[in-house]
Each structure stands twice: as structure tokens, then as C-alpha cells.
Image (cartoon, rainbow, N blue to C red; front, side, top):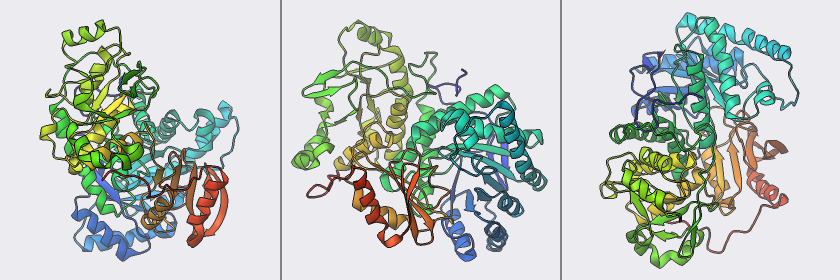
Length: 590
């Protein structure tokens, strides 16, 4: 299999053709574009215009608006007219699910149409059946007949299409042949791309979104390889995003891991950070991710060393367990959390209250071989050691921590556990959003590659925030679960309840349920499919009514919203996953 990027060590942006979305170019020589989506009802013209203008004021370059029905799609004409009257020519994207006729209407008024291959021409039935090759070909013919009219209209109006595949919302046809896998996501998108190309239409781009950063990263990597295999002229741009990332620090970290891991390898031409918050809060995070790439470019280097891991299939690097004091590191142990002596000293009065969130090792007191992975003498000394030792990249090197640690993992014997660092220059770190982005990208990317037996965060100066950041990165990467895991979609015009306040209520009631994964979805589009691997789901079924799910199966219907959180708690109890909250609440470093 070909490489998914030019080099895993030296930053080089993937070369793509340009796709025009109104006045905005994506890919080619254009900068990475930051976009978002409004959250109000599309039929509310005044609110739609206001939210769009608010996004543009904070630097949003493309705005997406849902069009769940033909009526909503028709109202995009009014929204565009009002925006132009206000002196705003930001490109508008119509978000389409299930309704080809809504796509045809929307395409008359907007600069881009986003379609989901999993539901554009298919009605999700979760049916299990075997397709013969002839039956599969018949399905593709049916899809082609549905999709071609939109392609022709977009070509006529010179507007763009995003072929946006989502993990968990693949068609039954794809599910039965490929499963709910990154491979299935890629093939689902390619089916639609081939139809567009047969019509000589090329003004389109791809996305491969998932709420699981590992799945998302793998899907985009597989897509770039598949596109290269199809031919040089399949160099279409990529839109990056983690779906249902959630809110607060958790949402920012999960987005940074997924998006940042791909950006640092040169993949991605436009990004959207999906937070369960007002959309304007997404833009600073997206801009910080783009800004991070300047740092990435400076810290890259050349190396022909073969990677120690398969970038297309997650497997944790096999290491030998090392005992430091009473703490086991490596082997089958979860990644451990190191802190600096300064952080430990500041937290010492509260260690008993931190419980499972207490730091496990102090960096300065931990036996750790810190090496330059380019130095042959350092590597030979590690090869000579028969007993496993903890290893990390040496501080002070002018290298990107991801590139340097990848090289370290490739060159040293696998028995040696590796400590991941968010920065090799802790004295120069400023914390805040840029520090969060740096830590999430540098540590999260490596964890998603299967590298890392312990982590050390030093870029955040506040001791409690530093410790919390480390644990939250482990949780977001799926490497160590210490609290309830939430999959919460960002609001949009399809949403049937207030996502922000509802998510807050659900968190208040369930935050102590360690290891339980709960999905909070505003509507059926982001419901059973995109909940992916959640244990329980809270999904808008109708205005003021909630459906509850176990996995992807709906089990309770039309529950009044006022009762729904309590009924969710009852459902968790029924399945044996409820425990009472500890006295004093859940410990959180602050």
C-alpha cells in the first residue's frame, strides 16, 4: 500500500486541485479554510442571517445551513438575499440528508451542496442481506439515476459538492459488503465520485467524519491512498472534522486530536470544529489548529526510516512492562500520567481528593532515558540494554514531538516503553488554547498511532489544568477511560431540543459513570447511525419528544422531554451500568 502522505517526518501539504465555493477557493495554493454551521431553524430567516453574520465577524470563511426539506431549501433564497443586502457574500453550503429533491432546490441558491452518500439515495433500514455482484451493480445504477440530476445542476450553476461520508451512517449496501468500517466509508464516497466524474464534473471534495478520532484518521488516510491509486487527477481536496465532539475542553481536545493529526501530515484543505456550543466558539479553535501548522513546519525533518506501526489499522505498540516504584508502565497497562515536580508540589495538598485522577509519577524522579532519535550512539545504547527501560525524546531538540517520537519508535527495540511529551521546550510554552491544541495534537496523534505508554504535559502552567488536560487527552484518544464518555452533536436547524442545556443536564446526572458512553443527538439524522459505538442514546424524535436507544436500537419512544433524563437513568439501571455518585461528587483537577 502506498504512503498516505509525502513523509511522516517532514511536513508537506498534500497537493490538490482547487475547488471553488463561490468566491472562496479550497485546495490548490489556497490557505486552509475554516468553516462552521448555524444552529437555528432554517425557516427563521432573521435568525439564520444574524448567526451567519456573527460567524463571518469572527473569521468563518464558509457557512453551512441545514436543508432537511424542500421548504427549508427554498428559504435559502431569502437567506441569501438578506445576506447580500447586508453586504455579506460568504459562501453558503446546504446540508442535505435523505432528500434529493431538497438538494435540487437548494442548489439553485447556494454555492455548495453537502450530500451524505449513506442516505442521499438510500433509506436506512439496517437490513442484513447478501448482494450478488449483479444486485450490487443494479443498486449503483439506481444511485446514479438519483445523483446525476444534482451533478448536472451544480455543473450548470458552477457550484461545488461535498461528498461527506459519516461513520455509522453508511448505506445498508455498503454495510453488508464492507461493514461499518473506514474501508466502507471510503468506498461509499468513491461510488459518488465516480458518478460525478462520468459527468465530467470535478468541482467536489471529500470528507470522512467520525466521532472516534482513530476511525476518522484511518478513513482519511485510506482515502488519500485510494485517490492516488485511482490516478493523478483524483487529487480532490479534503474537508476535515470530528463529528459529535462535544463541548468544553473535551470537545476541543477530541477535535484537535482528529483534525490536528491529519493536518500535521499535510492532509486537509478546509476544517470544521464541531462543538455543542454556539457556533462562534468553533472558529477560534479552527484558527488555532491552522496556526499550529507554522510550528509544525519548523520542527520537521527528513528521514527514510520505515514506520514502526501500520497507519491504516490501529494496534498498540507492544512493549515490556517496567515497574517504577509501585507503578507499572508498558505492556498491557493503560498509559500513565507523569507531571513535573512543580505540578506535583502544587497539587500535593489535594492528592487524596483527586482519587483516580492523581498524578502517578514525577518526571524528575522517574528513571528515564532521554535521547535524540537521530543519534546513532543513543540508539545503539538502547539496543544493548536487555532489560526494558523508559525512553523519551530529549528536551531542547528543535524537532516536532510527533515526528521525533515516530522516529524514536521506529529505531529503538519495541520492548522499551515510550513517554510522550506535549512539548520539548516547556519553558517557552504559554498554555491557553494554543497549549491545549499543541498537547492534544502532539500526544493524541501518537496515541492514535499506537505509540505511548505514559504522557507528560508541561505546556499548561496551571497545575490543576495541566493534570486535567493530560487525563482528558487520554480519554479523547480512547486510550484510558476515567469518566463517562459523551458523543454530543453540534446543534443545527434539524435539532429538536436545546442541545447545550440538555447535554449539561445529562452530564450532571451521569458524569460519575466511568466507562459508560452516552450519545446526545438532536435529531434522527444524527441518531442511530452516527452514535457509532455509544452504549446509550438520547435522540430527538419529535418536537418535545425523546427516543432512547441501547446501542443503535431504539427502545423507548416519544418520552416527554421533561422526563427524558430520568428515564435515561432508569434505562442505564436496567442494563446494570448504573452506580450512585460518590459522596462529594466526581474529582476534577482545577
